[in-house]
Image (cartoon, rainbow, N blue to C red; front, side, top):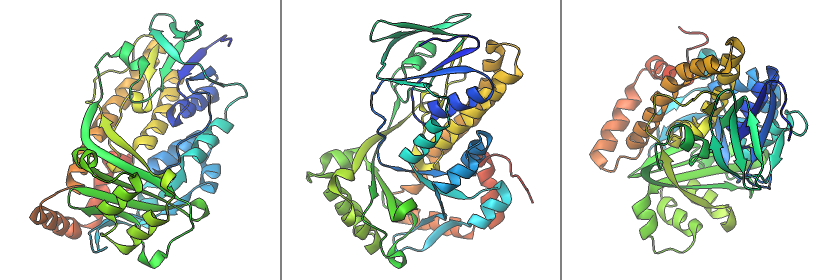
Length: 387
């Protein structure tokens, strides 16, 4: 793997790593992506891409192709009876931010990004065992004994990032106390009249579902990890049906049609925001930089933003170090706020006490539409066409 000229090595071939590779290639960098796994398989889940994520994909030159592999959805939260608690009209989002919310299969978005890269950019089956940040270049040591040097190293290696460990050394990620079920129901569309598209906020838990291309349905549910561990049920599908199936007939229908092997469960983590990510000739993107809980739907969107801002910052700077300083200055404050808001939204959505849930629902239902949209500015970015 030769690197000549203005060279970058990205560790990790997830959405953040591939998007960063494309953004850097688009600005003239010679980029290689190192991925520890040898497989191109991606877990079968769905992703919500909000207006800021779509705008980043447009910057990468993928706007039209992304629309072809995704479907528009209507966002919002519902109570256990299926009544709206708060709604986000797609037309309002488009008017304010230029785009609505779209759903895409994770594997389709990953394939879109990978397919836009130059040939032989991604190198699989190469675990990194050690990282040495330095100036003017950083060094990666591979499991096979090889050593790779680059003017820029980007850690896109996820929640337990090896690159982060060398740059920041802040230890293990922060437990949320929550476990999430995730699955794609591929058995055909359920009866749309009975399906509560969006998130249902119940006592101590959340359940969401959204359409995917091809008539599939993505669904997820969050419960406390203590509840998950203490369940006497032996399969994930049975656990999900037991916890959420009685909330609404549409929920039971979708879980029931899902193949047993398609249901996954993962404990949720984030990290306390740090004031600096970068060091000399290395930085972080995506979950390596700012892992967040999923309650704002911003994980992939913020990784896409990272990619665009990093490439822009480096292009505008006279050298890598100044570019990384500019990148941190723009991205650290923004993502730190979203990490905190994601955790707060999780607490709000999963209130346990009936009186608190009733009060929450009442307040959110009378919140003026304009104020609700303005509150999104802190997540989705400045309004494209503000009032």
